[in-house]
Length: 521
Image 1: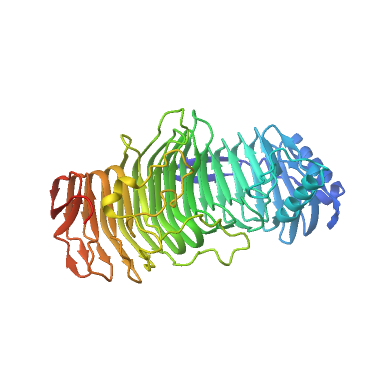
Image 2 (image 1 turned 30 degrees about the horizontal axis):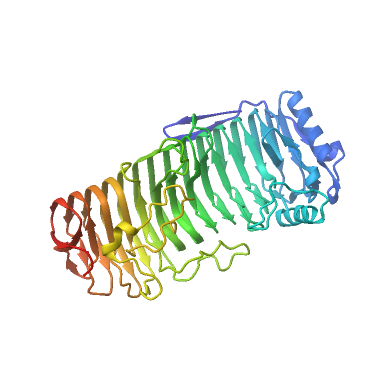
């Protein structure tokens, strides 16, 4: 079996090497969900690999297992009705270098996990068993998180490292005790038609892609008690490259599609399209470079998000305070439709996102760089975002004349709430060079006293068409220290904007008159 990419699509070619079947029951596995089948499954995998490849079949039934190691030229196939049931004893999970999971593959090639069966990690039961071992003194967890009351060292459901030509298809993966599917430095990777349901315990990312290249994630459903589909970069000398994410549905108690937080090398040449998002606590799209890495050449189109806490979060930060600052450039977002609720969007989750320790009004989408380090060349086109409104000055308030008081928080963990209360309800944009907003429609369903847009230290800004529905007579667009700004036919509550307030120094502004504001009104 081999994979190759052509014209942006991953194609699969079978060489016929996986022709022989190995049923795990022929190796002594019992389908009772009580008798360990770990050894039988491993013997079947080993024999298939030794013979040059084959299909290891987990038949209808429930098979209890600890760690199994997948090897080159082997397909692990779960028949419909098959359940691979993870042990709830942490001693049954092996660690191979940095890999710790129910299914591990390391330095392998031409491997598959497929079929209509289920992989159930029983994550909550396993995590609570680990918790009890720690508190009873039977197995002290040196990394135990006392603030969040959860054990460290929880295994992934599936972990693959340094593998090539990998395919995961059709399976249902559920109830991880940690990240569900984690792939690190893999090349030529296909994830297709899988179903992830893991609202079992904290930190249950659905799919994590780390420094992988030539990746395709399609036609899948992800319900995760943390980030849904998350790209990470741990190695400063590597990065995620040539990734295609399409036709997926995501529900997340964190962000639906996220780059970061770990962002040492970066993320390049990524296409996201035809995504449905719902009941998601944080952002629909979160692109974060905070550890010195690069984000560049990103396209996201046809994204629909309902009951989602934030639409867009793009952040260049400096969490690696002793290292270099990274960069973000060349991002295009088109055909995005987002509905932001007033209440927390993950109320129906078993494991809900953590609440903030301060009062705030609804947060806007945001794009922010750092002083002297701009986010560059961002296009946002044909986008509609509906906000709840209902902001109240008595609850929280950042005056427009105090825009310099919005903190940079460059070394903090990046989230759309990281700046505290923000002075706008639609978009907050700071330290950006090259931003085009075309046919962007922002609306509130109830009155918000803040403006729709605040642009602070923004150069080469174009707003073309689009509309604002504010349900008020307030100014809806604020400029501060901007340069080379063009506004064309931006409509606010039925009228074309011809005049905007300006703070600081705004130069080369066309299409509107800038009303100079000095200090507190």
